[in-house]
Image (cartoon, rainbow, N blue to C red; front, side, top):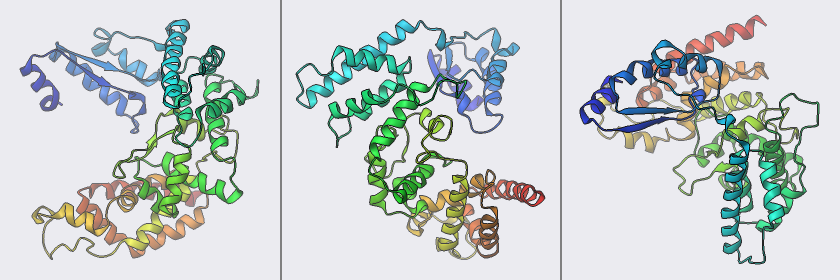
Length: 390
């Protein structure tokens, strides 16, 4: 950090702002406290630099900001203490601007949307800008008329949670919007179609890092075009890049939070339960079992990886990219949260370790992440002890 930030900024003597967004979303258990500790040490050394940090008010992060190192140099701004009228005004301005442009784009110049409709949308947003963005994305679906889409939202209840069923009312407007989008998008589905929707969504939502569309198709076992069409139906909820070499991911964290929470996603056709981690680890083990083989990159005998000049090209041509690379690096991360169909998982895990273990180590070595194997084996051993003791 000294070489990366402090020394260059100190020598440059420039005034700048470094933004650290969503600190609470660090996946490692102690990452947040580590970042705050480093910041506390850095701030006095680079006086011309300001750090702008956003996070949910989680107790371990709040406590970190109150440490002696940071407390004297930190100014806290609590977003939910902003006047609701100011937020509503911004959201209304956003709706007016975006929907006016949408109406013009579709040749609709007869006063759509009405002031009453915009006011209703603002009330439904309930101060959540993400609701406004998701609504505009939904109305702007390239296969649907925006006024019909707006009718769907207006016809939906303002909440999918019955009064008294939950203490958490904060996200009821988002719940209603997300549920309306899912139900409208897949209203023609049969039971088998719903199973495919859940499978593809789980491979989009539960993966440890965003995947390419081709990797999602490979991991789930569905045809590329099927996955493309399915995800296209809910493009208002996802970031779907035109470039196939860019990954697909939710446009906002609130959607994964919604669809994995049974108290919020009350339609079982769309709820993604933790059991889908089991399906993912089984898919990972199956894919590695099918594709892994000895010396996939055709590296000459006794040659070190560093001595192979065209190693990236060899990796790409070997098929060690996309789904296979993900499975090799992340299968055990799905395993450690698996508590469902464990007998199937144990059988698949045994087959993998007996038949493909060395080939897996070789792939990790070629990718330059051989150290991942140590962590994988430690966590797998811990999971096995827990499963066997139950």
